[in-house]
Amino acid sequence: MAELNYILKKHYSNHFNTLKNTSYDKNNDTYLCNSTLDVLDFDGLTKSLNPHKQPSSFDCLLCNEEEKKVYCVEFKNQEKSMINNKELHNKLKDGKSSLDGILHQHNISKDNYDFIFCVAFKASKMHYKYRRKIELTSIYFNLEKYSDKFDDIITNDIEFFTTEFHKKYSCK
Image (cartoon, rainbow, N blue to C red; front, side, top):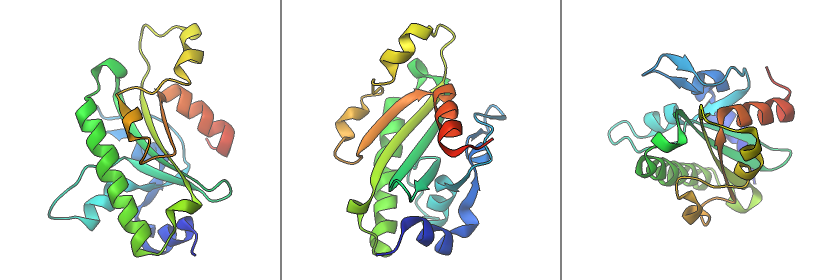
């Protein structure tokens, strides 16, 4: 069996970009994170694979071969109370379906990896530090019903994800 990261870089190298660029919100002309970490622009890849019928998809995919973890990340430049759950559900389902198609096409076993869906949203202005610990284990947007599609689902603010990715990948 081939490693996922190798297959992605071999067949889809033109769809790799920085985490910063995949976090870009064109409606508000802003980047949600500043990292130069190399990730797969999954939105761009999905568009190129389906030029006539554009399914929803998550923004980027980060594959950690060492830990056998695949992070499927969706950025939302909105506070969690403003996020459209139905749109998010479509991104999760359609994105996972596209990813499963790529895995099948390249003979990569899903069982070899843990798939983690991450939603990074804008921190609330009313956010209190004591709530941070509670939120670490909370799943928002009614996404827990998709636990059969992902090994883990993490929903938290962009500051949380930025801190975690900086610690884990020592990226700027």
